[in-house]
Every structure is written in C-alpha cells, then in structure tokens.
Length: 404
Image 1 (cartoon, rainbow, N blue to C red):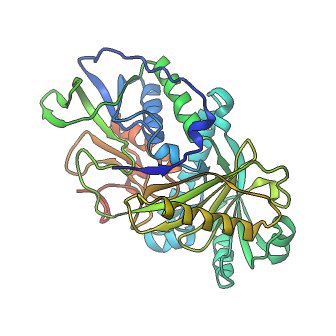
Image 2 (tube, rainbow, N blue to C red; image 1 turned 90 degrees about the vertical axis):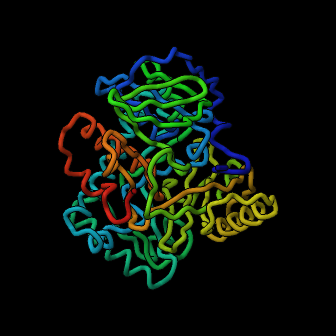
C-alpha cells in the first residue's frame, strides 16, 4: 500500500547515511517488532531498557513510511476534547487518558534529549482557535474542564487573539507544554542508539507467514526464519499480518512546506496552531523558519495518482495560510499527500490480542499518533512482564471498536 506521494520535507533535513548492521539471525528473541517507524523504535527502546533480546523487522527502509509524512506535532489534547471524552467513557478514565498523553510528551522529550541535536525537539504551546463563532463556547467549556483537572491551559478572547496572532477569531484554547520535533531525525538517531544497545534491525524484509508452535511464533521470510515468544505489531496504517481492526477509518491528508520566512511576527512564539473545524487545519514552524500546514482531509485511503489533484489541494492550503497571515511572502517548496487513520471512538489500539496471547499491538490511530505510541509502549512493557496495568483497560483491543 502506498502511504504517501509528493515531495517530502523531513528526509531532506537529516543528511544521515544510516548504517544498519546486518546481524545474523539469532535462534530466539524475547520480542520481535514488525514496523520501523516511530512506534516500532519506541517499542524497541522500551523493550531494550527492560533487558529483553529484541529484533525489529521493516519491509522497506526505516522512517520512510508514515513517519516521513508525520508533521512532528505533539499535543496532550486530542481530536476528541476532554469534556467530550468524559461523556463517552466517564470522567475517571477520560482524565487518566489525557494525563497519559501529557506524560507521554514528557517521555518523548526525555528520549529526544539523549539523541544528537535532540531531534529538534522544542516545547511549544498550542493554540486551537474557534473556526466559527459558535465554537468559542465549546472551547471555553474545554478550558474549564482542563483547568479543573489540573492541565496547564488558558482561554483567549478575540482581543488577545488579534493582538498575538494578527487575525480575528472569536476565541481560542491555549494548552501549554506541548512540543514539536523532527520525526525522521528522531527515528534514525533512535535506531542507531538502539543498535548500540543490542537491537537487531532487518530492513527490506517481508514477513510472509506467522506460525505458532509450542516454542513460540516463527516468522517466515525469504531471508530466513525468526522465532520469538512475543510479537509487537507497530505497522502504522499498513495491513496487519494478523487480526483485523473493527473501528477504523482510513483517510488521506495534504501538507505543504513553505520557503523560509524572515520574520514570524505576529505569530505568537511560533506556537502550534489548529482549529475546531473537522477536518481541521494544523500549522507549525521549523528550525529553518519554514511553515508546515496540513489538512483538507478526504474520506479516501488511496493516494491520488493525479499531480493536478495534489497541486490543487496544495494551492488551497497556501491560500488558507495566506488568509491567516497575509503579511508573509510564502510559496510552496514541498507538498505531499499521505494516508492516515483514526478510530471511531478516538482511542488508539494498544495491548494484547483478546484471543491470541503474546500478540501485541501498538497502533496510534488518530491525529496524536506519536503521543499514543509513547504511552502505549509503557503499557505493553508491563504486559510483557506480566505486571498489571490499569491503563491498558482504557485502550484495550477487546472493546467494541477494537480488533478481531
């Protein structure tokens, strides 16, 4: 399945000749991870820290799937607001899930600070503005809910928005301690670090058959057989080697990256920006002073083959950017379309298959996939070690919109 098409920005920023050590296949691994993106290497890092013998298998090159099209935005807020999630799953679990997301951003920062250039990790505040006048009351309700439960946030009225962003909106929710990073740098540097700690990485290998035996699971590939006690599927939006997700919706989204901008005024502190409308626009800046803006999601998973379609949507994103910031002299340097998925209940798919022990899933469906992957590896680590983890219940695969 083709995940993206167009000219990608992040791969041009690393200039890294990633050296994958071709280790001989060991007779047995404690854990094998399928998937060489953000989720896969977060899982590898966590399993290695737990003292496990780990291998990672990627059917293409690492960091070149969904990771390469990731915008590198890290929120503790989600596509479903906290007050809405409370109505869906109850106050205790909803607040705990938001707390998990908040802690996950901190955990990503801790890992990033062990990597060269910190993978361009930077703390940012996020500004979610009301796309329509009626949305302001919704944002105010969310502010009160977040504030009541101890999450750092503010509410801006139209006067503050005009002063700090230069455009006019009726209200905005501001959340603090969010972040941005370079996803490709993060994965490539983390891969090198994990290799040094003993991770076996195998790229451009397709797993053809999974065979369960008394000794564990055998993965059959054209390059040989791998045997493991535990499998972690970190396959992103690709088809699963085993199991079928019940509550997903695959879509496609468009993004552009502009030329460098000399002065970002009045963009307040180069905050992360998004909006209440669904599908929503999202914006951030880069270390070399470009703007990334994405959105215009379509309910189609297949990437369009037409260059005209990509050009049309890219120009529309540029127009929307210029409506907000007409003072910037911007043009498109990079543009692409990418497949992504979300879940019907706005929760990720994390945990052990309900009917197949030792098969674990780390699938961060939704607009906050990197954060979901980070919180998910902590859950899976406990499950692998047989330690009860109450958080696993919130994102369980055994729920109505789970896996079969």
